[in-house]
Image 1: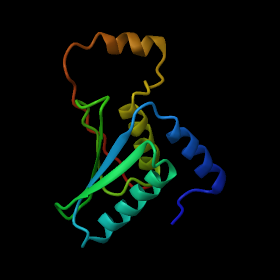
Image 2: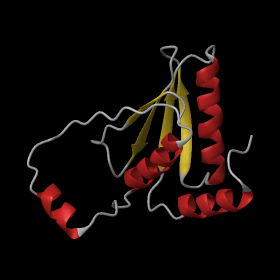
Image 3: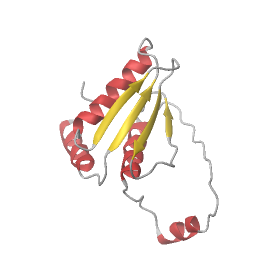
Image 4: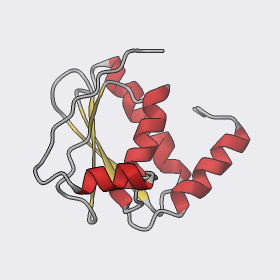
Length: 131
């Protein structure tokens, strides 16, 4: 299944092909659950756009899908997606993949300066709803 129009698919494929380091997308959940099957479909589609830089694996687990990332660049990040990463979460997943590959997020000088002052680990939970 194609989730994007041809020109968007091509642009995303080029964006993913330019990742500086490979990233693995891990999907956890029971394939008996239709939402997990849909999640695997979305992730395999994304990986098909750049199999040189992306891969995925599936782990059986709880019914609801859980998606997380692994790379050689960042092992200490803990970004997890619960549910199918579609809609706005699809964009967030792509941006997280770029972060895990070693692409620095685009931040202005003021924000970067404030972030550099943080001396301890911070946990943030971001909750989203279908749009």
